Amino acid sequence: MALPQQKLDATGARLAAMSAPEGGVWISEARAAARARVEAMGLPHRRDEYWKYTRPETLVDPQAIEASTFETYEPTVFGEIDRLKIVFVDGVYDAEASDDLSLAGVEIEPLAEAGAKDIHWARDLYGVLETRGQSPVERPLAALNTAYASDGVVIRVTGKAEKPVSLVYLQETTSSDAIFHHVVKIEAGADLTLLENGPAAARLNKVMEVEIADGGAFHHVRTQGRAHERRAATHIFARLGKESVFKSFTLTVNGALTRNEAVIELTGDDAVAHVAGAALGDGATGDFHHDDTVFITHDAENCESRQVYKKVLRNGAVGVFQGKILVKDGAQKTDGYQISQSLLLDDDSQFLAKPELEIYADDVVCSHGSTSGAIDEEGLFYLRSRGVPKDIATDLMVIAFVAEALEEIEDEAIAADVLSRLESWLQRRRG
Image (tube, rainbow, N blue to C red; front, side, top):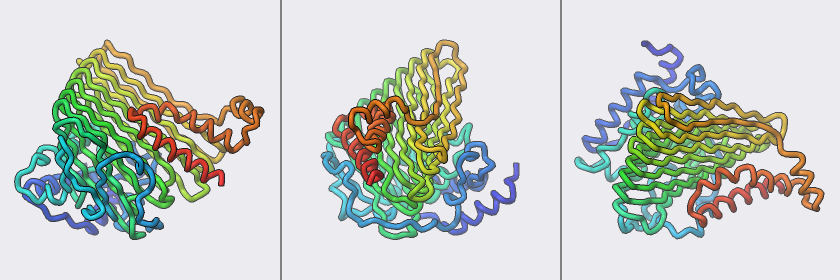
């Protein structure tokens, strides 16, 4: 079917403004195939079903809208965690600011270096999970990323990493337009914790492909914040083997537009996939539109998935959740749970939700729920009657509201660091 002229024109204008990075044969072939997918699908338009709640124009325009920068020092989040730090500035790997990439049981290379080689293990993964994730829902911004990402990291984990790997994204120029692509391969029985933080760019397009072999575990925690004007589209594509574990948590504060997508396949029996997020938006500082779109496919027996998303919105902020659980024929004993909730602190903010279940097996336990409401006045009165000022009492109730999502972070030190970040944001808003 031919693309509508409006979508055809927008896609052509965006592609004309881009140039494919140099690389070896395998990555050049993957990039060419991804560009062909973009041309066939067209970049997203508001009339597309999965974009009806979020306007994609600023994510697909040839030029990024400028966003104010911060000092180039690293944000304090995760600063007290013992970690291997990898720094990117305006989308480019900064070797001098990064730690040595040596870590027992872990192989790490910048994408630019891996892609320059004719033979590399990442050849079997780069763009592969992204391609699988294009069905049944097209995700053209992810294909655009595969075609044009110039940097990122490829990580192969063969044992239990002794400390987390931390990706730090700094922004130095107001017009930076960063495209990252990360590839993570967790071998059988291996274990890695990956951290992400920093403003990254005025506009960010990021893809992470994660393959977890039998018995492997991948823990992912990221914070998105500081930059009020930032626009970002991120994708995580994950494929889980037998008895493997995937857990991801995202805290988002600030940002004019953020769209986080997660596409997860449970392909081995007894696998576990948890994705969670907490978003705090205040429209008083500018636009705030936050969209979580999740698609989890159960294609094996006795697997568990959880989707837990909480959004706190005020001063005209907008939150979106689109979550789906697909249980394929034969995926018996599936346990699927999905909850999305918003706390609206005024009458101007709004929460738009589209929860979905599609089940083709007959021995499953699946549930989904979505609620939206104001703060509990009885709870607020209880705290105030005991001498707690209203603004502090409100913040305490906000923290209690997002607690279920925070509980998905297994590492207590990392969880405490994220909670501290959340408390600091709330304190600044009181000021």
